[in-house]
Image (cartoon, rainbow, N blue to C red; front, side):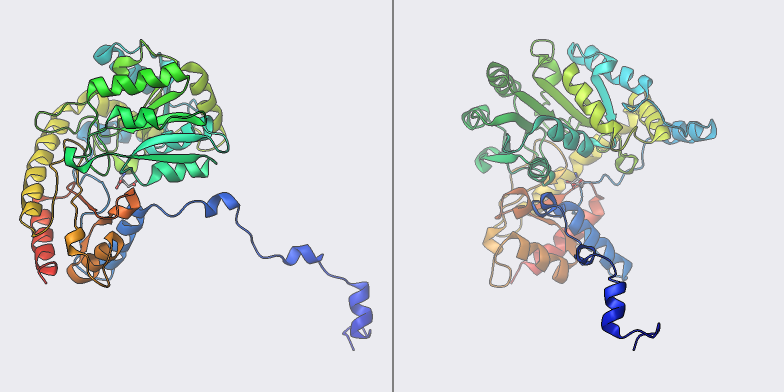
Length: 415
Ligand code: GLU
């Protein structure tokens, strides 16, 4: 009998409870199954967890400069907070920063972008995310060089599109070549994406190669997205070719993405930007208006100050990066069987470590796991970047960390 004096069956008939569909298990949207967690962030999360347990991990995983953010940026953000600059701004970001970026690219490269053709985003990663949402319909293709940064194909897939990876040659240090990219363009291609200097290889594209890709895109009515996050980080005789130099000529089809994270060691501030043709910027503004809204207000004031007054610190950091690069490439060269091109840019070395594959660590995932477990050195497996024979080592950490990490690796790989 039920509490109300009714037999169970009668009670249930009168009180049928929630409809059956209430009981369904939570189902995730199919688009989530198309992507995995970012390998760079995953490895760095694992390294941090080990550190929290008291382990001494030498972390060469995430590309995050160990330098302090510029003093002027910190001071400007502090002042902005004190002055109550803690409210919403224009969804595209504060006009002062948009204007300063437009002026920078006009002054340096003669780019025609006005402040209305600039959107500030919560990091370069968000600029790219919004771009793929704006440009790629179901089945739309985005052509990119491989190795590629982990988030490029995943963001394209998330938008419903198909990444098309075009292999570059390790013999040339993964320099980005125009012809194979152009050959990969077909009727479904919506964009070509070039990241130079590139993550994870440090490969760069020469100015004439960039022009060839840009012209091919223009002639076919598709866009060229240039991710120039590492623009200031070039070494030796290498130089950075910016799409901004082509914008006056090909205003409708070139797009520039940039970030304050690497140049200014402002990773956690989450400030990036995108410049490009007006109709596209209007689409990005719509997307941002329904997602993040403006990036953090006082962080944008910090970025504005960095842009105007942090050159001395940027140069000091650059020369330290150059010294670290020399050290790391030299030490990698001393590891038996390991081959590593000297990166022209960014702050990663990307050695071929396949000579050290063994049962139980038979690919880059296994080897990276082995190095973390045996040597407490965190690196990112090349497989995450489409290159299973390599691992990525970031030299955005101190020379001491690099030296000790390479000592440990030499020992772990000596067997
Ligand atoms: N872009 C850096 C990297 O590749 C930071 C982490 C991330 O966003 O992937 O390590």
